[in-house]
Length: 249
Ligand code: NAD
Image 1: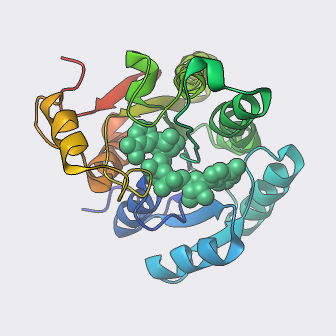
Image 2: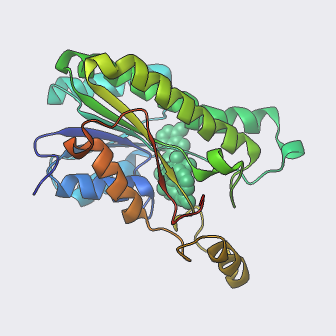
């Protein structure tokens, strides 16, 4: 059965072909949602939306541009009448060690992952409040929980830990309005971030640290996003859901 019939979803950073955002968009569309894909490049966003079928929308949007985000969301709300689901998926990482992080590195990583999550949420909360209904899903990372991963630097861990704090604070404040806010902490997932950058030896040693013995897939993260976006999780808010093959056991 379709879990998101008639619902309107905004997914940021969802133009990347092998990314978690587009996999989530595909699954949501299959479950009856109408999707807006927001990403940096207009053509890529439009192409990704077209791939989902008609009625879906792709738009250029930089999640750290406060006014731009507001305008995008207002245009969508004007067109759709509402936004039911927001997936804050846009994120960047930099494989740096503590002493190599410059002010610009820090700003870039904190901005996209954390400031972007706040701005996009602020832009949809009023319509969700009006409807007394909404689900916000934030992409954090196992890096927040473990203090690092294969590709993330300490500033990435800090940003994603910040996403967890923001998720819980928003969940607490918005619960009376029946707006649920949850975070997903993916472990090591095979996407463009990782593709072609690992030797076989590196891959084997990563797999050895994962109880399930393999990386996750984008579809496996999308499944969790569908659960959190839909009424299947109607009483779940403020939670962080691990999708990591047992990496924290
Ligand atoms: P990806 O690089 O394939 O996709 C990220 C997308 O975000 C890209 O399309 C990019 O253009 C977009 N983006 C970057 N900056 C943006 C901005 N300022 N405004 C709008 N869009 C912007 O990455 P992915 O692997 O699909 O990761 C998706 C999310 O999941 C990220 O938040 C990432 O940190 C998180 N994550 C990924 C993994 C993994 O193993 N792949 C693990 C844990 C968490």
